[in-house]
Image (tube, rainbow, N blue to C red; front, side, top):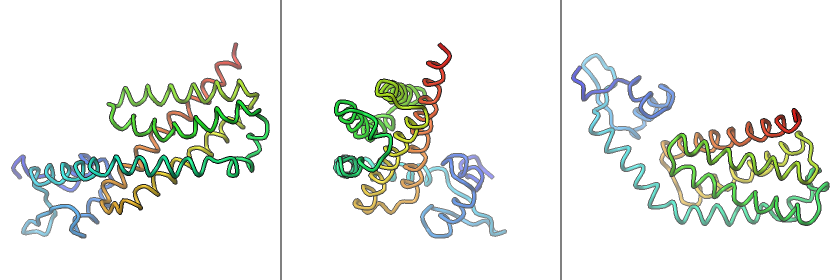
Length: 205
């Protein structure tokens, strides 16, 4: 077919999603799709580009309010009452607790910053956060296991804050939700690996 037509596989690679998701979105009317005489799904590149642009515009228009919503939710979750039940939190003094609360809140802000960066810069941003978490853990006497547990606590808060913000903004685009899931996983996985690498580097000294 002409170069301006895309197959289901082409769209899957372009959007970074599973082919079955592309098929479902097309059948549900989420993606603009055409059918060949043989019943195969085909996508016009110009229509798909316009669809992707509209998704980004919709996301950008709502992002500022969503960010504030997410940060407010995160502040509530990272309260003394929620943290008191964490065993690793009991080990650190008041200065350490204040430091960890700040780190948890800035995790959401870091994710937001990372989304505006290219792949290399976003990876560097995540590494800085990971080193900071690891240094905090060592400074306040946390083992590697406890440092990971602390990070997982804050990662859960960040995930729930992001979900809450998307739900409150009534985001219905599956493309936007999928993008958000991928951003969170990529960002937090890099941080977690950096925490482990930093602790191991200290242990080798």
